Length: 402
Image (tube, rainbow, N blue to C red):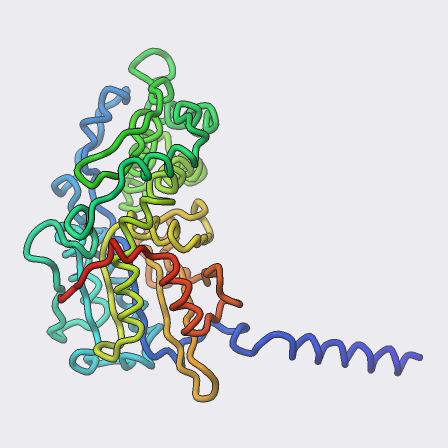
């Protein structure tokens, strides 16, 4: 009986091992043919801290660069990411020396922080190899901002999509996230009448700018900005974060408001209208033999909209779920195994918040992301293409000739 039991256990182990495809047990890159990296720029200074001054007891700290510019620490972290990508995709680009001419393509949005992030990435990826950062001659670049140049959004549909995701009552967001708002007020030092509290500002919805898309303003939008500013202070290694009132745990609580604000603003119709264009071109890049590695340097907006249009989710250690910290990226890998059909894998890459703060970002986390509609992490090429083409709206897709 003991022998029979042992044989049964061995048989079960063999069957279980065979039930899991060998590919699914590894995150290797030895058979990667093409990789497309869509990343957020590195750590920048706050873009408009003065607007939040009435809600802070103390003066917002000064930064060494202009508002919205890449910081020196941010440049270092992105350079470390470049080193990581070269090591990770050594089979695609070579382990050392300069990649073959044309193997690497880098394109950035026109902002200083995106262009400089692209340059910092190259310093880590292939220093001294003459690789340049391409970008549009002027703002806007329709790859990142397709509205209204490519097509006009439908304001009514956009408003219905956003309002329908929050019960048609944006003011309730303050109550739903009361504890997170309380943390914001505590950090700003406005809990005893010293200044206005962000939590007391009702959250509202309106159509922002000329793109025709509905957006969040008021309390939730302001709270998300505060959380983002604290994230920037923390990851830029400021000696004092949030006037000494923010540690790692409190930062994660605050970041929940930034994540949910992005999810509301950049999900549904907004994601389809704003990111169909770039997603379509990512698919083209995967199928192209022109380059082996594509690096598209944009903003957290694009990452949030990729999540919205494809229903993606991720979590890296030490961060809030679905956060998009500076330098983070979605990776689209086309695998071409020696035997078997080609397939696509999607990953989310981010340096941990503590590693960013300490300046040791050479080993970021690379976690697999499931694409709904695919049979597993390994998505057959045709299946992945069908999923993407079903998600995008061709009306918002234009030609792109970098």
